[in-house]
Every structure is written in structure tokens, then in C-alpha cells.
Length: 104
Image 1 (cartoon, rainbow, N blue to C red):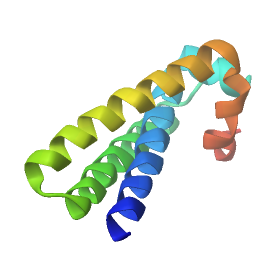
Image 2: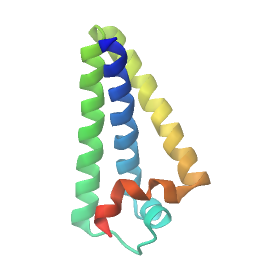
Image 3: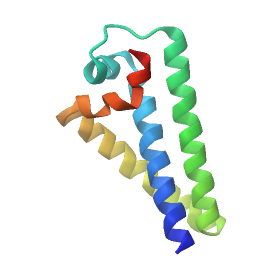
């Protein structure tokens, strides 16, 4: 049961990480938030949050399984998260706006 909760946590971190990394790009930020431009400080903050969330996702995977399986699961989570965020940006970009509401 603890493994499933760590994997669910890893999925959440992975989704947040991919969302923050995508929102660090000006085009995606404008699609999601509607603001014209990102400051360099906000871009750095979003990239740091995204990288930190992806690292936290890896750590959660390592807590759930042994390292060789955790690496495989983490790569699959990264792929699934990237696809979900890409589809959200293509279909409903405003849904990603709540990931960066604090930047308005």
C-alpha cells in the first residue's frame, strides 16, 4: 500500500514539474495565464520549481521500488506527464493557469 501512495505522489510531482517547465516558456505562459511576458526572475523560479518537482518525483519512485525498477517507472511517468501537459496545452491551456497563479 505504501508503494502505491509513493507512486501516486511521484505522478503528482511529475505532472507539476512538467507543467511548471512548460509554463516557463513565454508562449505557453501566455496561453495559460494570458499575461504578455514573463520576467527573467519568474522564468528562473518556474524552471527551478519544475526541476525540483521532477527530482522529488524520482525520489518518490526510489522510495517505492528498487533503483532499476524505479528508474524505469520514473521515465514512464515523465513520458505520461509530458503527454498530458502537451495535450492540456493544445486543448485547454487555461487549465494549467492555476500552476502559476502567483505570477500574475
